[in-house]
Length: 426
Image (cartoon, rainbow, N blue to C red; front, side, top):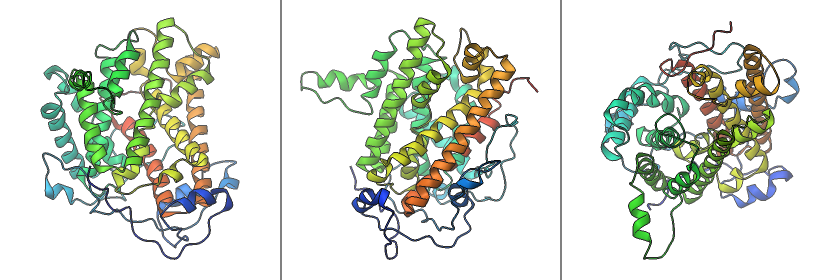
């Protein structure tokens, strides 16, 4: 594995951190940087906390200047590079708010995002399709339209506008496609079933967290890694990722994927027993079966590292969990009509609220919107608290990256009219 690239510019003279994070900061090799004047709206949003009635007391706004992406950070080479495309600056038209078609869920608290750079979107889309078809043989020809309709290039460019280049964006894009391939083929639309899911997921997880066994049995495991499309995709995407990430970033991702897989298994167990969980139980499952692995690699995709001791801070973990929870309820809301059209009972937050709290479909959907909004406000308050207590450049940039991912995730759901449409409640 090549050595990881540089982790960002050297900061000026340090200032002492607050006592609550003294141990974590002193263990980090990155000195503390005092806030510097800047007009970065993303950081103003994080440090400002949530907005709206009753939230003014949570504001911790201060002006800060984040580090810029390092274009020389080491990443895994792409087999089909386009050097010119890699030099496209991120978010070339940052002032242009996304204008693609797609309505916002009424009443949903969200932040509009700049229109994703079309040159980057086109190049990521080209490379990911070539990877899917040529490197991992991800799907049969008849699924090509669904792959194209996923619009993963737009998705990842919107979520990672600070990526130094296309190679960095491809790290996230391959992992996103691999995760969705496993979900579709093991759990959902393309042959998925709750029966036997645990065994399938466990074996697929060994593509991320390798089996260490005896020489007699290792060859059979190695052969299994290419036995189906999800495992081929997981193995390839992870190989690229670990060559670009630090060991702690790679291990963080494995941990978050184990969380995701545990959530899949809980949902599958309820499906087998036809159990409709209590609302709090459903939200507990969704904290694991959620998007968390995606925003927590924002530093790797950005070409820097949030040190492991800072990532592990309880307040940072709370902020990350809330961001993942809010982003996942967005999926519940936009995919609501799609899931109602699928066979059987498909659990999502509006469905669970309707059944457990005896509400109409419309009232349950509206309450699910309120739950999402509360989670978003809680995330922004938690992020503001972490930023105020630990204003290190990597912390501030990471928090901004997570918030940007949450916004980009919403925008992709809103604009992907190929997959999603809103219920006719209004």
